[in-house]
Amino acid sequence: MALSIALGLLWAAVVLLWGWQTRPRLVRSPSPAPPQARSSKIARASGLATAAVIALAVHPGLGVGMGLMMWIAPHRRRAHQKRRLQAEIIEELPEAIDLLRLAISSGLNVHLAVAAVGERLFGPVGLGLAGAAQRAHAGQRLADALEPLPDTVGEPVRPLVRVLIDGDRYGAELEPALEQLAADSRLLRRRRAEERARRLPLRLLLPLVTCVLPAFILLTLGPVLAESLTTLRQ
Image (tube, one colour):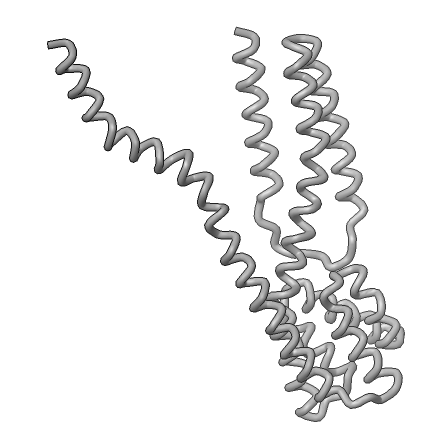
């Protein structure tokens, strides 16, 4: 009885934790947030405390399993968030580069082009450019404001940041470099889409084996087995 109650509470805790982590977020900040690390430590400590209580009250093996799960879950969640952020950057980067090319070809300088693109994109790249434009408007040089973006936003923006810094510091021509960056970013996005398409059959294998295959076996072999058992009884 106690084991059933503990398993039920454990399942409820897992469902609530998953629902809290997958809640919709209205704004994504491009800079690292220290409170997340603190909340992760608090969640890990509370999970280990819960595991210790279960180990003492119910069963040591169940408590050890609970503790391992709560210890591994934050690392997996951070890795998942990092992969999702990288995917969002790769998806948004070609549009950002095209808008920068359009703004510069219309006669805007680097500062105004970055500010204009940052106002019209709401993903991680747009937020990073908007933050850099705000810091430049406050008095910081645009090249210095753009320099930390690969660390705060993501590594895929490094080539774009390098081109913009060269244009701001040395007056390098931006349109040819942005054109090449746009082609490279589209190629990267296409390769990522092809990779996701190749992974799709593997992801469908688990629901196919666990859901469709048992039902197929039951529908095809069930009547045959029932008829065979009826014949043997007669």
